[in-house]
Amino acid sequence: MKWLYLAAVVAIFLKFLLFPNPAPEWPEPSIIDVIVNDSGVPNAVTGIIFRNRLYDTIFEVVVFTISIMGCKFLLANEKPLSQVFQFSDRPSIILARLGALISALVSIELAIRGHLSPGGGFAAGVAGGTAIGLVAITSNSEWMEEIYQRWRAALAEKLSVLLFIVLAALTLLGFSLPQGEFGGILSGGMIPLMNILVAFKVALGSWAAILLFIRYRGLF
View 1 (tube, rainbow, N blue to C red):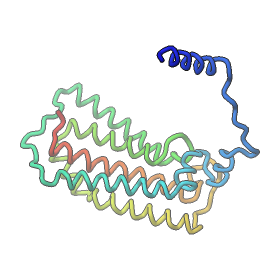
View 2 (view 1 turned 90 degrees about the vertical axis):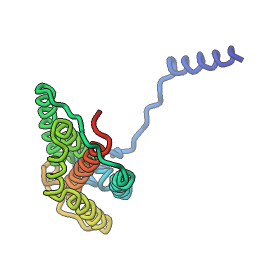
View 3 (view 1 turned 180 degrees about the horizontal axis):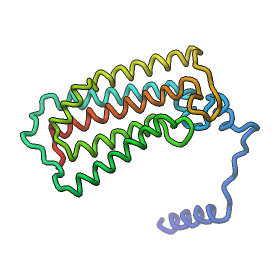
């Protein structure tokens, strides 16, 4: 039996080695060109997410919101830690906050220009959440919690989800902003606004999850 397996492996290897993969023949114009022309933005991935597969994106946003609510629900009966150990040496603090600054700038760039270049709202939100996480591991957790409550980040997160769903519904009904000049910041109709809303929502949701896990699980 082992010789049969060996022969199958050799045959598959020879197939990969000797027979090239067939190249797909796209119709003219290609599917990428169709998506780009339909969405009005150079980033075809963003065009697919926010226009051609908008239903999927709506449920992704809802799933992320439910996951944050699940974290709060599962940790509601936990006892907060009496002491949270964080980085206290100066080099670690400087490096973490420098990384947070870079991540925050990348997040803003991806949120504003995500419809023009690789990236998008989810990538921007992850970069923003990374910046918040790097600040959280070097700062007092109570101070981070106070800022979160003062700026009503939880309410802002929920409002961003509702506003995204409203804009998505308007897009599905056929309403949209002017496409603008192709390749410009104010192009793509509602896609730039939806991109920024997703980035905002993911970053704030990440902030909530980070605070919860630091409060009940600590960092180390």
